[in-house]
Length: 625
Image (cartoon, rainbow, N blue to C red; front, side):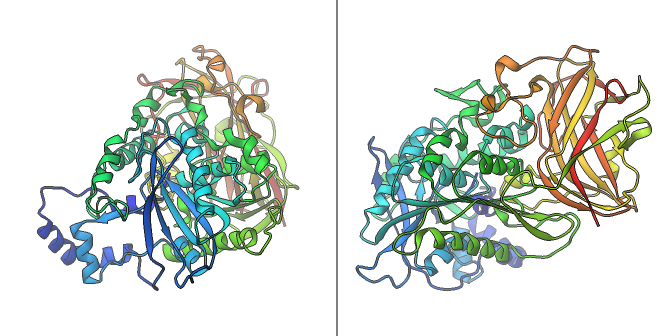
């Protein structure tokens, strides 16, 4: 989701009953310094941005904006970087924004990526996907086959332009990160590199319905946002999408917007239980993701540079699955960032970076990748080898590996035991169990890993000690040594419930000597979807434990009957200090983000923790000395 992550932060709706003049006065008098800090600052003059319509083979006209490097001479040819988004690529200024621009409080400048590309003699091409922005057409589905075909045709168009040297790379963040990846399946010889940042390799499992549970807040927020965009609704900072250069009277823009139609994605997702349920037309819920194009992407051999954050929704597991599934040369970077990489977050190390610093650092690294793949007479598509660069939380260090899992880490079992203990020894009891009545008020807060997808906001988990009192917890003795956990923790629960269904959340936490509880990672699973899947059922090489979420595998719980649940968490790399304790916390709901399962009633669960029926967590860990 997102070329407009920044737009979504800046351009939320403003009450229409407030006259523009009054709004401007209030804005200047009360919020001048706030707005000045949020809006980008102009740093240098870039090349002129132009726009036009490009007609696809089926007659659909797409709005294209392109910026050529400043000082480009007649006859000089450059490589081009293309971004395709459904969020609109250019908006008209509202009265308020124009006033701020005229007053010098705000400055209308490109993104860090566009600035760095233009400075480095690349052309930057931004495309409104069909049925969005100023483009014509309808959107039967997001990331549709029609959209993928458009991307291939746009690569052909770019390569034929008089300023093009015939070499194209793709780029994007979130939604446009997915299109940057899908572009590699287009079978276009002019495409030499793809840089999908913070993308969703498996949209359903890692964002929309993780564990088979609807990410209610995110899907509702996103659905409402894109519906407003497609209807061309303005807000405080924009007066709707901008037309192309030749459409002075906006006649074509109005015609294009009249064609826009997208399904109510929130309503559709509310009716989805399984991956093979029909979402719209011929599209099933599980058919939206880039991994469905894996055969053609691999065939292309295109080098891929991908970048994700450890706690950015569930995208880290998808990024590692991409690394393992594709044979393409790949560089994967996993760091302490929010969605889009605009905010730093290591829960154990405090550092202060501005959004601008992080944004330009990220742009520089992506630019380095493009330089290696697109510069020179004969760019070598095989010049990039497979490598993972990852950051270890709590240690503040970067490491590199060519393989996954990382060698040297053993899966260590920690058993749930009596009195809330987490032990390396299997329990002695033969009938031990704990009873927990689900508390539907439990929450991970509104700055969690799922909320950062709603506009690229910061991630922050407050001290979990108070919240953990609502949960069922198991805590180890203080660690005798420093340890590192790098990989996918897997929790095995032997449970029974008074309900025929339920949602199970497991959290890996650090307990400091002073009692502070720090969130590290989590996993969730709807009991109905508990069937562990094989690779053939998923369609790619998953990390940790995965489930099929197919209709044939759905199975309700039998109340009172014991059932095993295996829940893979989201991958992490974390350094825990001697004297700290490891905790596993179990919940039946996260009111901050997810739908309630079951929809009514107050189920009680029993967790078996005995020698015959054990519950435990497997941690990929090693002792650090």
